[in-house]
Each structure stands twice: as structure tokens, then as C-alpha cells.
Amino acid sequence: MANLKCNACGGTYNTTQRDGTAYFHQCPAEIITTPASSTASGAGAGEVREQRTAIRDENIRRGIVYVDGKPHKFVPNPEERNQSLLVPGEAGIISEGDGVSQLD
Image (cartoon, rainbow, N blue to C red; front, side, top):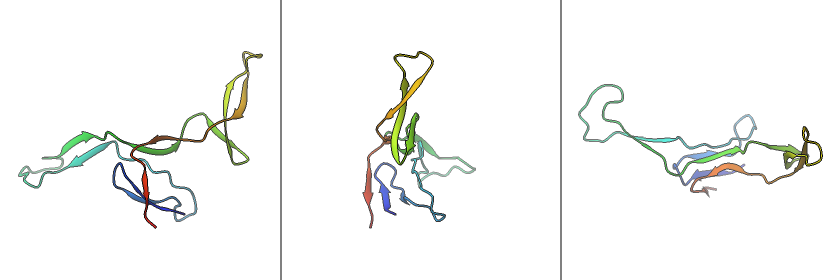
């Protein structure tokens, strides 16, 4: 169980949820700010929206499966056109963003 801070969005999180399951952080895609000088009223008025340039997404890359706790991937079988082979693969998350910092 690790307490981490995302260097991309500034969010803090624990890698394990209260129920014991793993938590996979994903930064919001947009940065939404409301200027203090905004005098507009109403929901969303005065908001400034911009796309985040560095997004961390800790979800596992598509195509990776785990067998006995080790990452594997399917590749085409060169000998049988309609079959795939399960071979050792590299584990990895979708996007590192700006990385994380350990808090504890």
C-alpha cells in the first residue's frame, strides 16, 4: 500500500482502496479554472478549460493478460493463420504522464 502524489495533476491517492482492491489513477483530461476576478454568474460562467498536456493513466495497456502473476500478450501464430500464441509480454500502464512522488 503506497501513498502517492501524481506529478501531472497534483492528485494524491493510495494504491489500495478501502476494500482491498487496487486503485489505478487516471488524471482528468481537462484543467478547469475559474478566475477570481470573474463577475459572471451561472453554472460554468467564467470557467477556463484547457487540455492537460501530461496525463497519467495507470490502467493496464490493452492486450496484456496475467498468467500466474506475470504479464503475457497474444501474438499471431506464424504457422496457423487463424490462431494466436500467448507469449511473455511487458507489463505497463497506458501513460506515465509526469510520474509520481512517494508521500510516505
